[in-house]
Length: 177
Length: 132
Image (cartoon, rainbow over all chains, first blue to last red; front, side, top):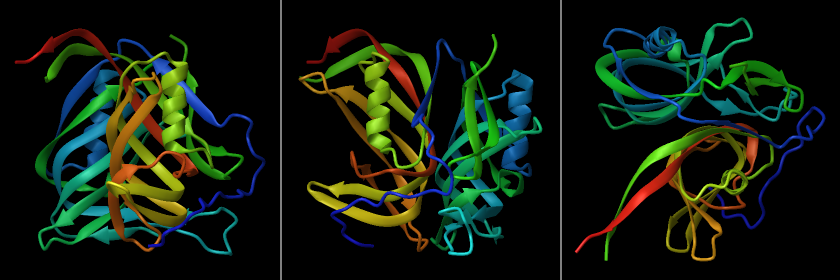
């Protein structure tokens, strides 16, 4: 922790894109409350609901859930890697942990499979905090939970390599009605 | 006197913030450009090149990057008396050393690292009712 008077900006490896902010607007979008079922993965619960609802993109708010296992990445940087930051190898927490908070977006991979970009923080039964980039397909639910889905069905949200940061991220585009 | 607003959500906006662009200012630019009067910050996920959180009156904490992970964010954007947007969005982040911090994101001091995704939803007031 530092107290800084200046704010650090970064030089990424690729050319700076002229667009600095993408804004996609929808109207009369629907919201859904879904169950996160014990024994299933977070990925399975969310993607099965989206498939049933015929949604390809959504914002996800997880209200409460307890996991029996989570896998996650931390973020780091190293001089050997061109990108300014990158994820570690997967870490695993193999004990019950209750969600404290999370943020997530759901879209598609470049192969058309559902993808969840989810960051979150959990607390174990001993009070230890664990957080990072959750690997939703290896986050197993221990107790039923609830999440709300805000449909973003006016747009395609597909993972692609951003030329500026040279890292795959969601690339939003309006889709045909 | 306390006022209760009866209303409903309207338009919903997905905002992707590119590297080095400020989180709070990007949300406020979207708010102005879209002609919003009030908005709810629904969710956010991404990383910051530098993070500054307000933890109390006049108290802030600065976290060095290059990548501070946003773990969640919620809040509201409204207008002050002069009509300028004011964002009150708080959340939890994880520093490069793995430590966790929480607070309100300070305007102009939270540039995006790789990407920040945020979803904001318009709050449309139908009726204001004064209590008491």
